[in-house]
Image (tube, rainbow over all chains, first blue to last red; front, side, top):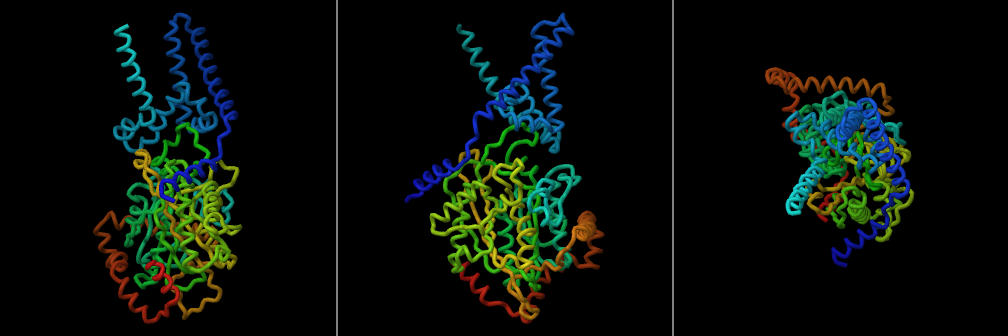
Length: 148
Length: 405
């Protein structure tokens, strides 16, 4: 048996041995947590619209996002958010909380390497791809929009 | 010595010391790992009843880039340092090399040790600690902890009987979260080679212990061994599976160089010392990849080094074995060890001060001859002892045969 055949057989065998993550419980947890975070966001939005009736809609949503981002960073700093994320999975990743956590956690982690080489350089190691996607996407949209 | 989580596991009664605060009051986890290793090495030397000046070499390594924890520890110890890297198989690698050094009269007393820290390994290999991500079910948990052994010419009732250095085996696994599957073929290869060369069967061992294959890796190993006609029965276990409770969220079990080091130096040596185990095969397994190679899509090569440990029932003073462990104090209680650690810390501090101040260093060198004695006197003293020692030629012959093979 040649090496490649052996390796592919072994990979197939290992694949069959790997315990599968049960989809339904994970989906349910993600739905619960994601739903909770969104409901919380909506709650803050309604609260701000009640407290500051003069604010425009976009300003209200900015205030709401700032609050949610602050809470996530705070919980990340306290060491609670990783527990929540491990429980809820994508439910904590999809809302803006996931993005906030992915920036604040390396910032905390690499603080020891100094402000410039630690925090500034390493801060976007995880969130970097999202930002690149956003920038590239907006460029493409801009080009398409130009010719429409 | 292990961290708080490992200290709650099934082996909690065997560990010499469980740290309560895994930062060890240091400003970074890399520093904590260093301090942990220094405490382990000095603690082991103290426990054996030797002084640092009695040790000729320090064999060690760890998982951090450029094995910084070991080399920085060696700086504090000011011992001749032989830095090794076989990922999580570093413990058996250093043990095997150290035993060869002692066996061939290159040294009298040698310390071999390694350790890992969950947080520093996580930082280097995976994601920031506070990132709220989920791990796949095949992931393993790098343990905080480690161990060190003194390999000495002095008599003891545990000896290293034979060693097998493993080949690097790669069966094409590239999933960084499935190290058990990547390392199992190398463990299989090393165990088969070892028992074949020793003309033994797997049943002849009271325990065959792999380093950190985890639950999945162990199952794969059992299947692979069966495929090769060797049945691993109840006498087989894995350090990674033993160290954690099933209730803890550690997925497939513990991993890391410290995993086999801490299980060897606590559970295994105590069982051997009692005579509960007569013959044990420890096969630490390592995955020799880096984050760069994994990101570039390379597969994960595995390595496994095997060390066979034997209980010596009635050892005599005159008949010095080829390689023996110099663990002297039996049933050392925690309080005593704590005391020893305080002592060792003082020694470490002293050595640290020596390093900082060259004037003091010179003065101390004149007084105690710490470092110069270590590096220069190893050969003459061993020559002197050579005449006194009656070596067990059988073991040496066995070993040299194996090396030739």
